[in-house]
Length: 150
Figure 1 (spheres, rainbow, N blue to C red):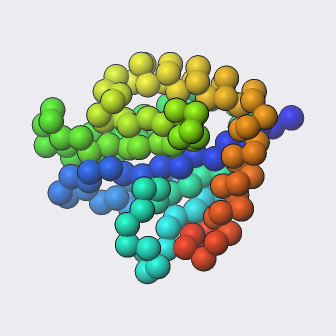
Figure 2: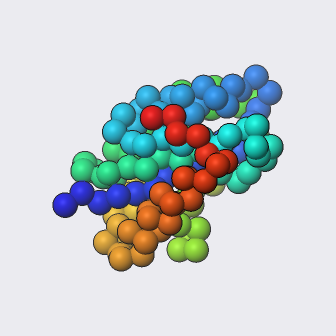
């Protein structure tokens, strides 16, 4: 049986010259089987989460982590203005369980991020709570502040 996962993402501290929409476009492209939602900017001017991907996980969790790193590495990292620039990709799965990552600040090493994400998410997906959170997020994106992109 497939497991579902709600992946909530935002670009944090965007560097001047970074087109945030290009980051979300690339995430959408790299997650072909996902339902993709973005905040309706005409209804919300600022939010902690701007992009949600509802995934059916049939492959490895490590491949999802690899996609997240790839998008950071190709779309965000080249635009950073130095070591102190904290522009990055913030990923949330379940904040109450401590499942959130900030690539570009807390995680600067690809292998460290992929290992941490994979171990924690695989463990989480074996919990009943993961299905409950997925269903809650799926319900929330039906609200009028979210636009389904695909």
